[in-house]
Length: 154
Image 1: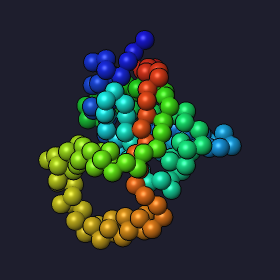
Image 2: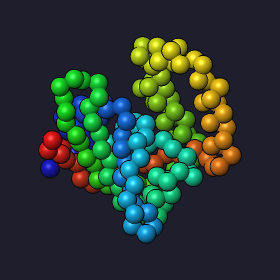
Image 3: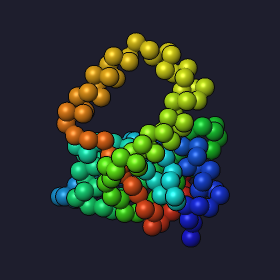
């Protein structure tokens, strides 16, 4: 049985840029949401806000599946699925740690800087979007504790 700290699993997580989290509503309706993520202490942290469908569903039912696809390496078409239990955290120290890790993974890279420069005109839109989200709720982290790790056949 695979574990999150297996070398092959770590490679896929490191080369994936977006995780797709599958959740269930209180009525059992499934939903899949793409979110930025970081790996932390053999768990997965996904960033969102507490008003989003993903966060509300995790509060209703902690069972989740998270899918990872390799995006940084051409020819590697593996899909990794991690099933586990999730919880919501709005702890300031965890949010700060998550944001710092996200900055180094997504923004403070050559590709991230080039992307920001190419889309500099969108900054006011992003600021407005973030301000609207702040009115609805608070940032949070979905913390996933893995229970089962497997590669899906393509």
